[in-house]
Image (cartoon, rainbow, N blue to C red; front, top):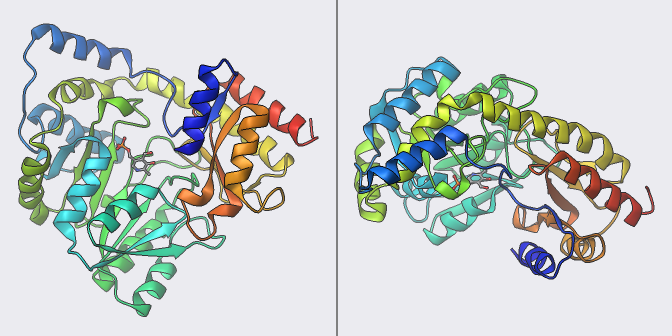
Length: 368
Ligand SMILES: Cc1ncc(COP(=O)(O)O)c(C=O)c1O
């Protein structure tokens, strides 16, 4: 937040800031999504929907599972949410009690830890220590120390971009099932994997909770719309909690989101640009001394070990911004223990911006 605020301040006084710090697409929502929203606005009335979301959108999401994953997920198990952020609140409230121990990977998306802490859930951070992602072995070891009630992981992950391969995902989900650990799979970066097709945790067990969103691949961060796939037994509980916390997800965004699944041509063009950015960063970052801490297999992030350049990534990020006008995210937020040695670079921006940012960093480090 501090880096973003400083980047905005510098931009406002005319500095040519390039942001590699934001975690969102730079493109607008697809044309047909915006057209559907315009039609809905012209029609006039935007109101509440069912707490679990509009039937037509739940149908469209169910169809997406059939088409994209060859999985049969009935609309009755789908809850539309106010972004995946609301889905975390709902999942944690429905699945866990205060005092329960729930494991996440470090580094990982900071909100997991913060929301759980706010709800009195005991967060067990599993330090990856060089591993690309959480695996069954990590889970067994943490559970053996003190039993876990749940585990939450993302693939592709923020901040690393790492993807859990199909075999390892099967192992992880199977091990959780065997140990009686509830699984939440954050699949928000699905459709943004570059090396392998998407595999949902649902392929291995219908009893997991999957969280997803229109924010990333579908370029709809500001529309605040996402979804979850729930085990049958959690649907009613989530419905009741959702009704009380949010009444319903925003209807305008729901009407628009139905169109998102038909916008593949436009969205694949955006993804092709990320892929070109990724190739550039994959080559240049290590040459500049930013060792990749995980393979850049998905999302739009490179997570780098910067210990050859600094021992304090926050200070480094401030200097980088002040001296080159390139904003990138220090690792501390993602990992309170080892984050000072890491930086996250987002490549969701334009190719030209990525080129310019890398040139500036190269000159700054004396490696043009
Ligand atoms: C891994 C991950 N999950 C969830 C979110 C939240 O997204 P939203 O609430 O916009 O769906 C983010 C946002 O950056 C994220 O990186």
